[in-house]
Amino acid sequence: MLLVKTEFKYKDSSKDFKLSASFKTSSKGVTAIYGPSGSGKTTLFRIISGLIKGSEELITLNNEIICNSKDNKWTPPHERGIGYVFQDVRLFPHLNVKNNLTFVSKLKKKSNLETISINTIVESLNIEKLLYKKVHHLSGGEKKLVAIGRALMMKPKILLLDEPLGGLDVERKRNIIPYLDELCTNLNIPILYISHNINEIKKLANWIITMKDGKVNSFGSIEEVTGRIDLSHITEGKKTKTILKTKIINHEQENNLTILEIGNQKLSIPLINKEINSLVKIEIRPQDVGVALSKPKDVSFLNILLGTVSVIISNENNTYIDIQINVGSEEKPKFIWSKITKFAERNLKIKKGNSVYILLKTMSIKINNTSIKKIINSH
Amino acid sequence: MFGLTEIELNALRLSFKVTIWGMIFTFPIALFTAWLLSRKEFIGKSFLNAFVHIPLVVPPVVIGYFLILLLGREGYLGRLLYEFFGLTLIFTWQGAAIAASIVSFPLFVRPIRQAFEMIDPALEEAASSLGANQKQKFIYLILPIIMPGIITGAILFIARALGEFGATITFASNIIGLTQTLPLAIYQATITPDGDKIAIRLIIISLTLAFSSLLLSEYLSKKYYSKIKD
Image (tube, rainbow over all chains, first blue to last red; front, side):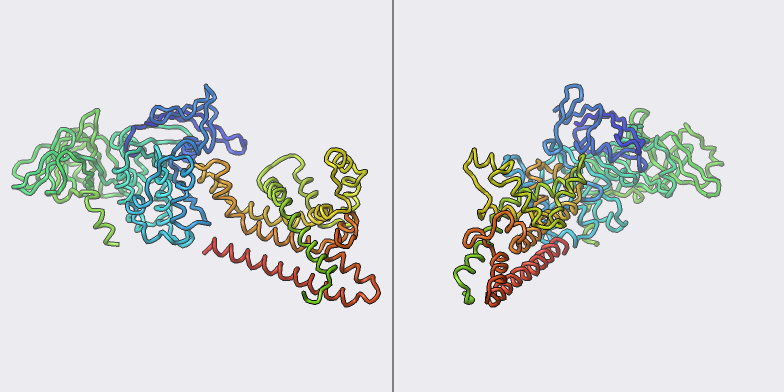
């Protein structure tokens, strides 16, 4: 668990920027830090890792105090054990990939600290082919992977990722996301993850911290906060795809179906080969979600969920509108996006707070990241 | 060897002795000065910078004269050295080494300083976050990156120190077998009747040394930088 309370001001008066943040993250899982450029995301990372010093700060990691300005305690960055993957990568130019990775082992040989074996890293990031390459010969995506590997070699207590997918084209992103996703699930350490791409965040993160003008605006689970974030970001690209983490509660072998739990309701998807009680991320395109005011009978849709309309986004010149429907509870919301015509909206008189049924075909629910190998092999 | 007389060989040997010892003692000072000039901001930095470069533009004989004032038997420091350690520098090969080192010092500092300036401070932050303390950062990150600068500086230093004349003759004098380095032997030959042959032989050696060391420094730094970049 990471606890951060900090105040920071640039001494340089030309930069009129003040950061003031206070938050706590869970001991596992991915916490995304989301906000526009200049909102202080990277500054926050630099304070956590000790590269700059806040005027007031209290940082604890797994209940161990890293710094506390009240006691004048401040641990220098090299003793913090915090893995930091910089936005601009920062691989060592005089070393090849392998020596970049083993840089940490060289340092720790003397201090007998634990490091992860290089084979584990190389295997899990699939960078075997790059080992003897000079870093100048790597592509942007490859550099990012090596930088992540290098940070993991030190067996960090927490991993800070500053826009690990920034500056990469869509293709490369698609290549790296599965690794990152797998990494996030397999590592038993918390990850803080800066991004200003809400879709990435929805895919990878469990919690989200939103920042603006040097202040932490909100903190909570992805489902909770994305409902509150300024939605213009999301709708700009018309990307209101739903991503939810759900639990497998049953396999109906006779019907070839797997049953998932969403809020207190059930969702059927085509049979998948994963253990009961394990978590799966599902993706639903808004255009695949239908809305009804009463529970329809005698229809082929297997998934009919009751929910409450929480947000309606309509654009004057558009045929369609986006509706966000909460199918979870008030305390633990689970949002599903639906895209319907304005005509239907007017006909059904849909208003915020209305109870509606959503209709979902089994085949329109996509399982996110069940077959990493497949994605990789296709490239 | 090459038909050189014992005296000439001695001059050559002495030149190398003076240069190598000078280099060994100058290296840490040059490294520190280069680091100071490239990495630190302090009052009087431009003064220090000018001071370091003075030997490049001042006649070496002036340097030699100042050395007499400072380190001679009656010099401010020389008197103390003699009193407490029984040490005499004037008219000795150690004195020649000091004279040659001071004159060649700026050539040693400059390439190292430029190499320091090439290091992105961001890389040092990366090394810190990976757990490197100051010492480890220097050994595993900075030193390998500035190595070509050190090599270039060392070679330029050697080339200059081997050819040092003015400060050496002023401070250490021209004593055969004791302080007579290669350039002093050339000078001696040119003022001796019938010394032309000796002078030409020594001049050829001197030119060869200077030329090959410049070529070597060029070659090494190119090789090293291409290793980093490709």
